[in-house]
Length: 149
Image 1: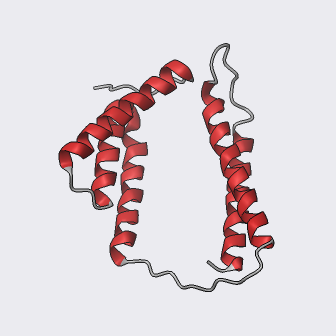
Image 2 (image 1 turned 90 degrees about the vertical axis):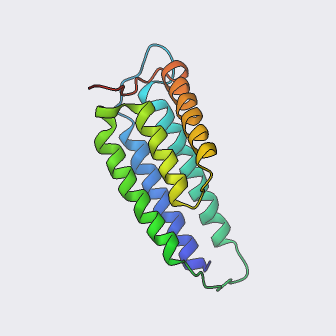
Image 3 (image 1 turned 120 degrees about the vertical axis):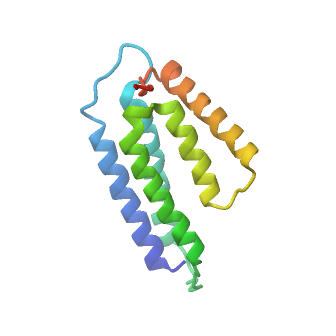
């Protein structure tokens, strides 16, 4: 990547990270666990640190790398499909619940990006959803939406 693109990317991620971090300030603090603000803060701090590393690395880089990157049409379509999936996910989350919808989201995301091992994808999707559900509800004590007919 060119220095300009890396620097712009670093600055954009820094602003996004700071914005999300500032949005977690007003969240309630729980008596136990990390609560609803704990995990977003952890992720945004990691994003901010990565952005700072990218900016510093770019500013101190000595050589200019001007390779062009070719993005395939199938990748762009997969990415757009993922955006559609995520939009549906956000819309249906309260109706279908976290476990069902997250499993479906993960399965179809893997399919969109080329994985055609259906049984493996299904098992990974369900296991990942169960682990995430356990971690968020038990460790972080964050309530997640459940199925409501």
